[in-house]
Image 1 (tube, one colour):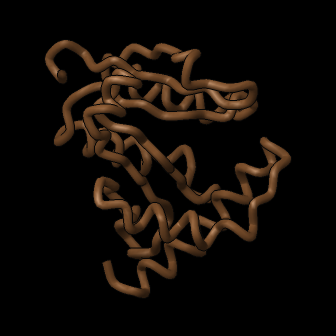
Image 2: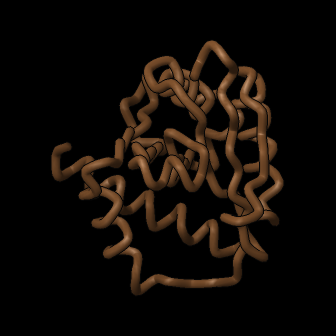
Length: 160
């Protein structure tokens, strides 16, 4: 990934985390650069910038971790969606849905993700997007906490 795209992604990552903090009331501004660098350098992390096809402007990103055997055993998932973001002006236009469908076409197996319980729109998005493809949502209590829910979306039999 070129340095300009990486810098654009970092600015967007900052906006994304600040938006999440409106749900959690937490602010980890000092940690953002480290978190981002960790995500970008994880060897098992796929980082997918999302661009507007007409303008080529960066409008979001998807970060998916390829779980190791121990993580797969603990979660029951093959993949973990670490971060997914679309700028507010581009939401409800199927950009993220298209990216998720493309990802699933090339990556079989159960998918894990965490949502903030107060963020009902995000939970609905994942239910509609993955549920619409036949994935069944299960909350994994042992990996959840008081404010966040870990969900395993079980792949349809043909997609396992």
